[in-house]
Amino acid sequence: MNIKLFLKKLFFRLGFNVEKISNHKDIELFISQFRKNYKSTELIRIGGNSDGGYLLPNILENIKYCFSAGVGNVSTFEKELSQNYQIKSFMADASVNSPPEDDKNFTFIKKFLGSKTFDEFISLEDWVSQNIKDKNSQKILQMDIEGSEFEVFTFESAESLSQFSLMIVEFHGLQNLSNRNFLKMISAIFQKIYLNFSICHVHPNNYSGLYNLNKLKIPSSIEVTFIRNDFLDKIKSSSRVCLPHPLDQKTVSNINEIDMPEIWWKN
View 1 (tube, one colour):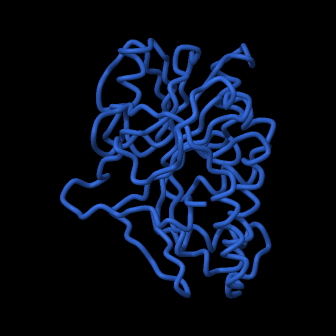
View 2 (view 1 turned 180 degrees about the horizontal axis):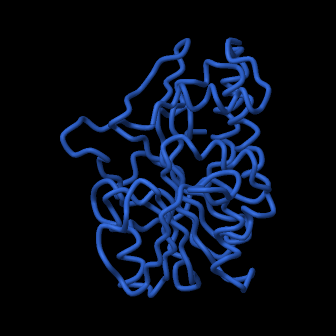
View 3 (view 1 turned 180 degrees about the vertical axis):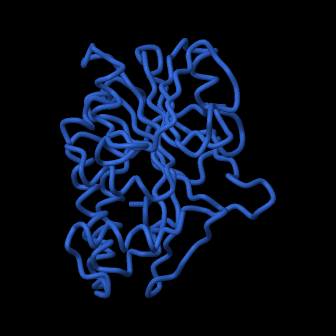
């Protein structure tokens, strides 16, 4: 997906001026809020040692369902959830006809995740409600949808998001923090998430590169694991945040790894 074109269309829908440049202090504020909401917890790795594997706290005994948007050609995360924890995964992606492998705990729909349900799109709220009747069941949201995460999170309510115990989301195009309207949008998204969640892990995608915005180091794409705040007292905290985590692996094996800049996580 062309991230710039997608963002221009989204900004137009939101009534934003796409030409405005961000204030440096506003970018620093977004990063400082990210750092402030980072909590150190013990983590496990699910989904193998390459793209498709993620770090998360081990609260999986109570998880019943995973909603996974953006299947592509990898389903190692969902496969391990099924095999080791008997977690049922609902998977959505209109760019493929089926998951790359079969599993009794996989349910697939050929749709993109979006802000509304129409044609080949389904909203997060509709997707969950069509499959799960017990609103109190513990669920994971895993999302790698190539920029469309901004539309989903912009139009999804904090209450709807709070039904998930964990959210694992790849955010794309962060070099656009230099655009005032992108910064305004993503800041609002993260403030909405912070109402009920904390960050417990972040890993930059080494395929996308690292940018310098007025001496601030910005990874283009980051994989972020969020844990709902009511779980923080139930899990073991780590003594301190230290990145890269020992369980981190390269997203793309033949490209040099990118370390998450300390300004994002080190107090």
